[in-house]
Image 1: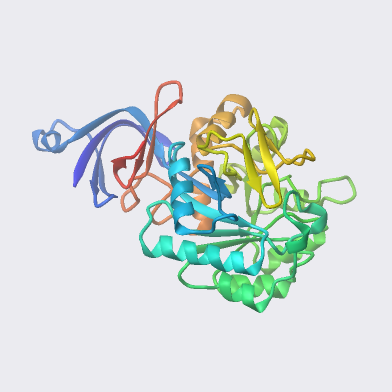
Image 2 (image 1 turned 90 degrees about the horizontal axis):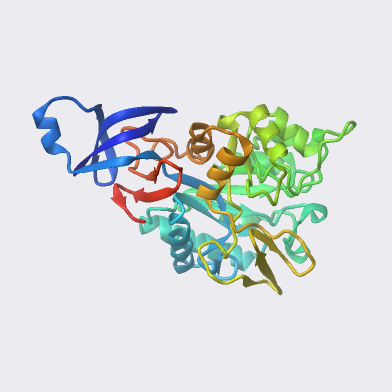
Length: 378
């Protein structure tokens, strides 16, 4: 057990001064204001003068540390990815498998199952981004693997040893009955990589879809006569992932989404590739490669290919360039994704019974330290 004095900590969206946090086995067991009690002060083992905010939660992580999950869907890869992203404040993540064959899907599920069973501190589940998508909005996903959902895939998605399972589907290629079946079996269904009409998206929401994958990108746009998936997403009460790397979106598109959805329905994601936490600028990707130039990733034909964004970078971009408060940006990187994924009872905020996962910020919002399960890990 340890007791820390946090001089400035974000609790329930407000900065609280001089809070004493008791941590036992990696979980916060008690929070109280500092008093003049000699007994309380004697228990304090550590003092944190930097600001503390909740550890970041990323629901869309394709790779990191030089590893792509699709290329090596193993427990070792997950550990490498988690270590790479932890350096940038991500204490919880969902390894994300993009469109691939059934054998790779099953291997990825086995790897996540191993991570869950071993108690890996960063892993709470898995995100299958495809393969049940729209060819017209595939992005860098390979057309040859895009297909309808089969019973074999359904059996994988509904396994009970994967933690929380999220799947991104295109509703024009995934019927409402299939979506309803997935949801009834505990799968979190998000919509994306889709050219669906507004009406088709609405039917998918009625069937139980609760989220949207990387808002604006790879989805039918908003126009005057066809609001598309973008319009449906903005009008819905569902959570939307959003990539704030200044490559995927114009800053004003982010501002519009923020003003429309608010921080409780907008969650920051990285859509990170292997480049995060790696020195290599060129990394193999299926039968081609992805090149990093500055903070932009593309395939040889110029197609945007995920990002080299980290979660702290996303938060800072929101604060510095969009005009979002640090409090709201932090919420979008922690509380919103934890609520969306149904893990908010244990991660996503600084509160009693939550894991002691923190990001420690200096006065200029630089990342000073990262805490996971009550220990400084970066």
